[in-house]
Image 1: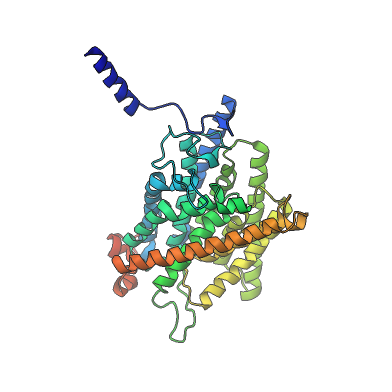
Image 2: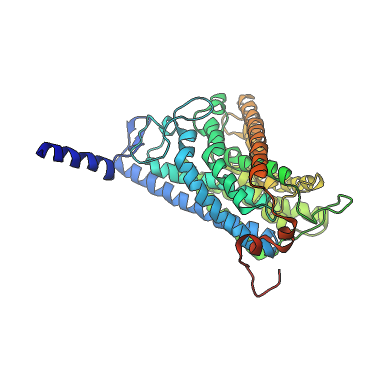
Length: 445
């Protein structure tokens, strides 16, 4: 009887007591790492994850400022909701699909992520010394970013419940599958594609899903005249949007440097410098372009110019020289985003915040440019055309997968629960109709 009790106690302890054995367990490719390095890597990666988490606030402010006052609460709720939903989806299935051992298209191990899971479940992360839950936490922030991109593009006419359904499935399955192709040892990684901090994996994936959603959803009421000409529906608060941009820029230093999951001071400083140069040069590019086209510098285009440069350099920030980061991953994307916004507007793709141009066009441009300007294997550095080809294939593959998946998912949501609010709700504003709250109760929307 005594032995039976001891066995029961030990069994319960094994099930319920926390374990101190970590998945990546202080090793890099099965080589033990000094404890001080594991600590430094883990602390830095957690700090970087917190910086990326702050970007949720930046997205909320940019999207809120670029849209009308009567939809502010709805935008804030979507940014809260998509992070909460993404956290669960990425923990349940997403992290395993993305980094688990499996096949060229998806991982098949490591679901319901927990600390005791070992290197054998996540072989594509064997290069990192940090604990499994640290890696999960950092990449959760990327997953939530991909989801929240869609909130801005589909703003002012999308049902809240429908957006939450989308957020769950993109974090549970669609984003992790793309991530596995590139970062999880999948077929694009085998092809040789590089995307250091997610110009395509994070940003373009979110943007192409947004594009599919906007096409299924249709433009806002009053956005185009009877003759099909664009009509302005200006955002209500440029101060809010500008503050959001600065918060995003600040968080982007964690976004890009944290991808190292290592406290390597030389690499961190290089990546941070390239990030800052690209954002600054993109601001100048967008400002000069609008000044030339419209006769006055436009604040909305300048803000989106900064973000487009940061998107473009994300995948290349560890691989290119500073002057290249400033010119080809900063200034040029700042110019490009202006023309992209205008082009989408002409074909009646109604994106209130310019998210598709910033994250889709900017992400694709930066990914392809890396094939030309990689400091070791880029075409212009004597590396031949292999990397450029891999980058181009990756851009096309992610676009095709995201667009087809997005059309199917949004069409199903539309058929089952409805995707768009009623015309009456849209005209009145989603805040009171969807949430029973008004962001500015003392003023008329």
